[in-house]
Image (cartoon, rainbow, N blue to C red):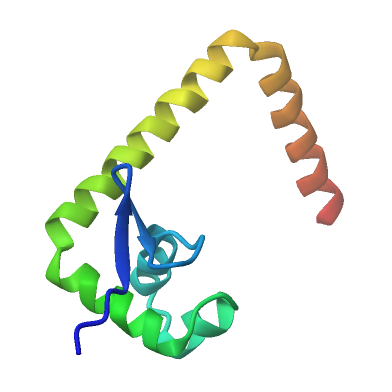
Length: 105
């Protein structure tokens, strides 16, 4: 029996028949979480799906790592572009974060 645990939708990897990205499982795997912990974190996934996703990642590591890197680069470029478009907003956001941190200490 050949189960399909991961599918490629428009260049992105997803756990088959779910809205959970493979990236989400891979990040948790990189952080050292066990498949059981990952399955508990994603109620939409069974333990079998998590193991299948990790096995898929290990078999296709180069392609998945390339996809993750591309998404990270795209996200960073978008963040930088947004900062350039509205620097005042991001300055205020940074100040609010600093005030929140100061209030916690």
